[in-house]
Figure 1 (cartoon, helix red, strand yellow):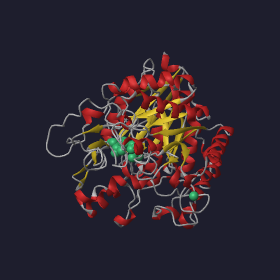
Figure 2 (cartoon, protein in one colour):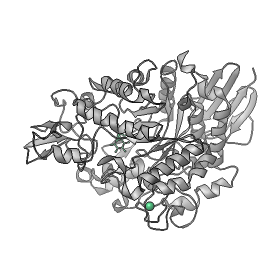
Figure 3 (tube, rainbow, N blue to C red):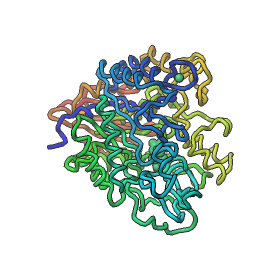
Figure 4 (cartoon, rainbow, N blue to C red):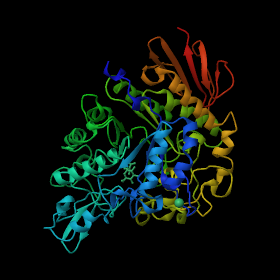
Length: 537
Ligand code: ISL
Ligand code: CA
């Protein structure tokens, strides 16, 4: 079976770093590359094998680096190309690979291509972007119209994100070539692959048709998984990725498993994995007024579906959080009464399902949502752009539940000033609980979330069934329990996860207890309990 082929990225544990918030080496309040270098030993000890760096390129930072003005130079606050090479060498020398974030649906409006493009319709770069003489009813991700008027040209340009992030015209072969060259530049320097931002948004439906309905609408059918998207990725793969031993994971919102297989199916030759949003997008904030808590039964159902649909072809990406999502223990667990138990249970799930686990910085110590007190503490463009429509109070409430800033506050290294992140005031405030939740305290506590993550990672390296084994759901009478086995040539591992704060009477199969977040082996399954058992065969 093709998916049994042993490949490094299937065995990987990927750790996402948001450089601005990881570690500040020169005390200007902004995380940087030298800061990351100083923490490589921490990452090695944790056991991760791949670092994904959120964008480190030159950027005016209207969207914290997801608005790039030069793809081949390093953002000044983060350091220099020499610093980056030192990081890459440092990581490689301890067996850690490194992937970069390729943000190529759009550039910054300060990118030289765009500065040229808006000079005149005859400029050779004009056709690098998408223009129209009228603004249709498309809404951007970051509120308001997706079109911005340029009076000098009497034309509008398309921006599916902020107005400082004009969308590139992928129909133009020159644009695609430029993008391939950027990827090659970094691969030639030795990087091990890319997380490809908004990977399914490059092909827009011809003629920019209006969406049906009142007001501005996010035009999902007209820019997600558009007509040319697979051709673009096949070309990218053929021209570039196929020539390197590299790995690609594309971010693909609004994508079901059938469509996902078109990106990641082994014979498709497009990308290796995709980041889908089905389990992430299940609760909403209706009109920014009423928050619905996550239904863990739905999460379970969705994850099972993806496990089964991508079982013989393709490969899952296992994650609950990243720099765009609230903290996982706050959203899917219980960040007060069962903080430790639920953080560990969620970690156990991510390391025992079939696929590659992605850890977002701070998840391994159970960092929580922040509890921002005032709108002045909010930094994220996605939240701030909502103020005209919803007002500050609602936006603050939204930001506290779902806002992206929750994931972007400084990493908690220790209980010292600014959580040990910097001697200077950080660019964004720290969460107040860093004295209780930090890496230093947890390193020395054998029962900590951090040490549980270390054990999970070691276990996954030790038991091939946890990587390559088939996934089978194990039915129980209780919806709150998520049980499954992972089976491979004489190895059978049973996983029990209690996704709730209730207890259940349930007899688990006999076998050797490999790991648990409680210290008992009775039939009473405790709140948020996780047990990983090697079944006697
Ligand atoms: O979460 C989302 C879809 O359900 C979107 O809000 C999100 O913005 C989208 O997934 C794209 O995200 C990526 O591209 C953005 C950037 O702001 C995000 O940080 C990045 O992950 C624009 O580059
Ligand atoms: Ca710094």
